[in-house]
Image (cartoon, rainbow, N blue to C red; front, side, top):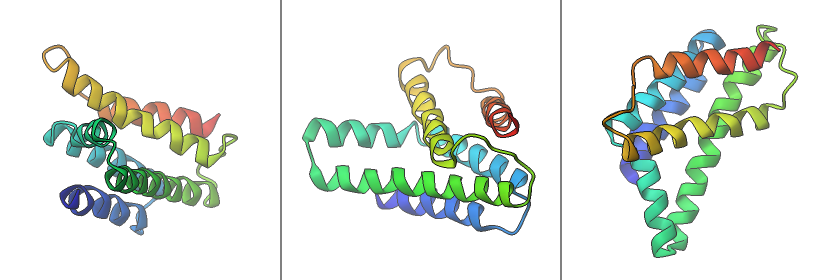
Amino acid sequence: MEDVKNDLLVELQHIANKKTSPERRLQEFICYHVKYLKENKGVTILLFTEAAYQNNDLLKKQLNEFFRLIKQHFGKIIHDGIAQKIWNCALSVDSLATLYMGIPITLNIELNLNPEVFTYKNFCGQMLVLIKRALVN
């Protein structure tokens, strides 16, 4: 859990708080998250499975906090883009952040259940395009 906090959460927060454009931060945020999960073999879904299987309340609480913080950092980038009139988001930012959280979950499942057939090539770019489409409609 400490490794996930230090290697994933701290970096995602750093990206969300950068002074670069929201578009650049969004790309960096998604791609860093995807890269981290790929390099760490979907560790977050493994931790979730362990917490659920063991019915470990402390681990569940920590994972819930990670989930909440990732959504919060993602939402900050989106709010910044809306404030700068880059995106005209008719969706609620919280709903979009929840939708975003499906990306790492899907990636985790693919990495763990279909490693021999899953095509990682440009996964980050594909997810970025989908999110940007949601932001401009």
